[in-house]
Image 1 (cartoon, rainbow, N blue to C red):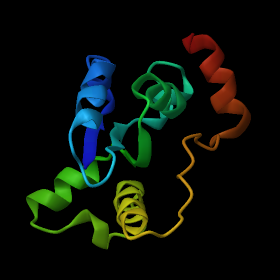
Image 2: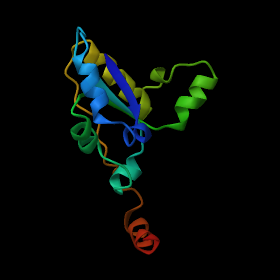
Image 3: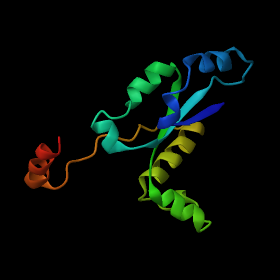
Image 4: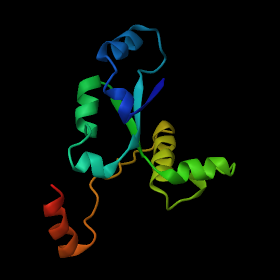
Length: 128
C-alpha cells in the first residue's frame, strides 16, 4: 500500500493512522510518497523537511514529488507529465515507479542550487 500525502496534509496527520494501517493484514507494509514539495520553503525552514516528515510518521519513504505548475498544464492538455523528462515532478513520479519495480534509485536532492550570485544574496539580506 502506498500512501500519498502532500506536505500540507502531513501537518494534520496523526501518526496513529500509520499504526492503524500497519495493523491491517497487508501483503506489503505501507510506504509514503510526499508530494507538492516546495524546495524554497523547505530550504528556508518554512515547511517540514523530508527527514522530519518520515521521522514523524515512522514509515518508509518511497519517493518525493516536487510541486510544479506544469503538472496542471499537462493534465489540462490530457498529456501525462511523466513524458517530460526534464520536469522535476516527472522525475519524481518515474523514480517512484522504478522503486516499486524493485530498482534502487536515490532520492532527488531537495536543496536548490543558488542562482544569481552575489546580487541575489545581497538582495536577500534585505528581505529578512
